Image (cartoon, rainbow, N blue to C red; front, side, top):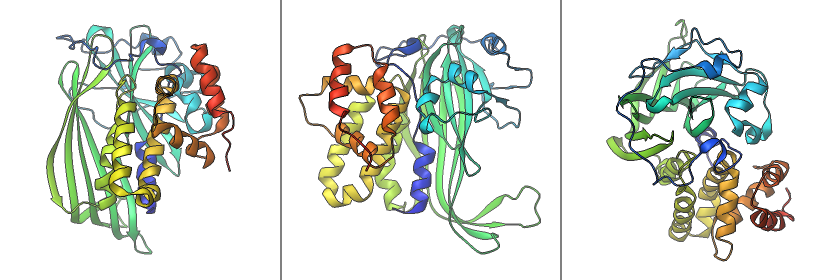
Amino acid sequence: MKARNLFLLAALLLMPLVACNANGASTNATDQAAPAAAAPEKPDLGFLTAMGLDVSNLNIINDVWEFSVDFIELNEDQALKLLPMAQFLEGGDIYDGRYYITAAKALPDGYTMLLYGWETGDDASLQMMGIYDKDGNITDFMHLGNMGEFSDIEQNEDYTQGRAQMTDIDLKFTEPGVFTLDKTVKEADWKRDPNSDDGSHKPTKVHWLVQTLETYRVDDKGHIALDGRKEVKRQGTLDKEYESWTAIYDLSRLPMSDATRIDQLNDLAGKMKQTQGDQQYADGTAYIVISAINEYFATNPDALFQWIYKNRDHSNMIVGHLQESVTNHYLDKALLDQAISQMTDKAAQKYINDLTAGWAPE
């Protein structure tokens, strides 16, 4: 697999929540009401100040999210309180400043959207979104990836020109509880002025480009639902691997409350294996699917375990790939066991315990 695709995976997949209904997360994405007609101009950030956080300079989103250098670093306790998923992310490695709040938005019905960044190492960071009720309980979560990704493919020795895959994502509110993600991904040649203060890369030739527009709405339960996704523009011939794996990438980013995402991933994986054949599937696509399953585990492990339990009498792609994830060191068995220990459905817990008892890294 090409190195740039491994980097892209890291930027598209990962995250967590302890239980399917923890803090009010929905288990049925179809049970969502329409958003209310209005929202306050400014969000009520009392639940943040109660945690000792200074919100005076926090970027407040009106209609369009704009980058700001002002952000709020979280210590370990604050990160776990606001983002329970952190206990399953990156081996549970949490340290002061790894997670930080970058922006806030007032939503209808007293809900608040917080945008986060988190450090993944090698000077890289990802963005994610959490929805909170007036008491600061998380009601939904969605991974946004790297909203301004620049992934090198090749470059010269003095790093003044090269070729890269670039991703730009714009977030805009079109109604009080409705927002869009306008995403452009392109592969392009670039040049950099070594005397420039900002060190920016200027695209010189675009080899391929695809622009998509996704529309989401936040309902009166604080749940995010994907309303639609459409392709706005396409230019050139897309990278074959990116083209074939885009559908999996899209599924991996569905909100935590979407109960259909595991079924969709299982069905898509089965179809892709049948179409590609065992070898081609194993050589690349399987890893993408495993990464998506790890995302589902981290976001909502109980929902994943319940799905496995309910489908125990039927063959599926999920169980085998989850075991592969442990075998190949993608998922720490200790984290898997930790999540199983938190299950409240004892029958399902026993089944999952027995199923995974013999799993071990090679």
